[in-house]
Image 1: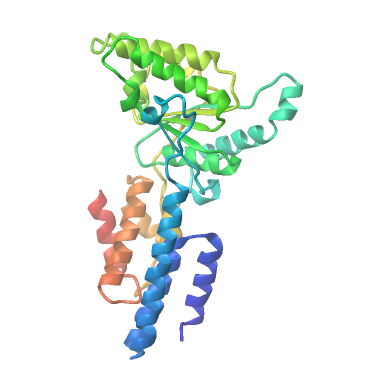
Image 2: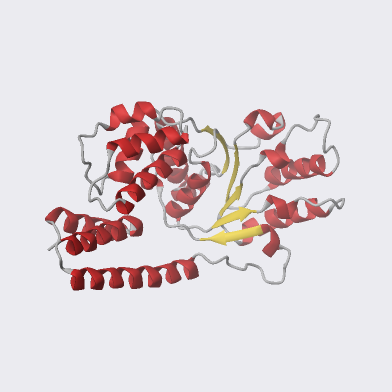
Length: 324
């Protein structure tokens, strides 16, 4: 029979909707039964898990398939991808200042009618800056999840065209969509169209696109949330910054935040040896959240492929150092 702790973990992860950890613990139970010689039970468990994963994957795929919007305007299919995220702010580990700013945005969005009575509008035009892998793109999903909105990812490769005027027309089409389809509109890698207008290269269409963006975001009066994200804020034209309600800077995680991230991703498992997340976090200082999560996943894979029921601190340290 499965250990009580494993059963509690199964129930916990099922309740949280954390499929990956649910299946990992379930596979641990199957492996444990196999080691005890209960091969029929182990095989049955594995079959049930694989079937459940297959059914769940199909459901997830259907739910997150790109949603065609405004069918008469075919151009939108090439420049906007749409999906409904499930994550929320509680699923993220954030710097305290970033977390405070995001909670304020949600609070204002949820009380927009009250603000409107006093001729005020909630924050909804955001510029997110900071190193890659620190949560900027995930923030767009979390805000949408909190507010029950879809995320519209702007495909800048589809917007930028070599033909004069075509890029501006596509950008205008996106802004025209915002009042009709309320959501979170994410312009990722925004520096690709928002760079300084006085730079020598791409003085033609790129400069016109930036001017068009400045005009459109200034005029926009929709209820949609506009998010521009960049790893290179120093590349942005200075005129952009005052067009946004908030400029939020994402730092690399601190030792405390690294420790919390490791614990969050590895809490379903025990270690062979004693683990001090704070000490381990010192090794990972300088890594972004994405690297830390991937190192955690690498450690779990090593455990599974090695046939162990517990994680190795040595494998975790090795995985973190490999990411540096």
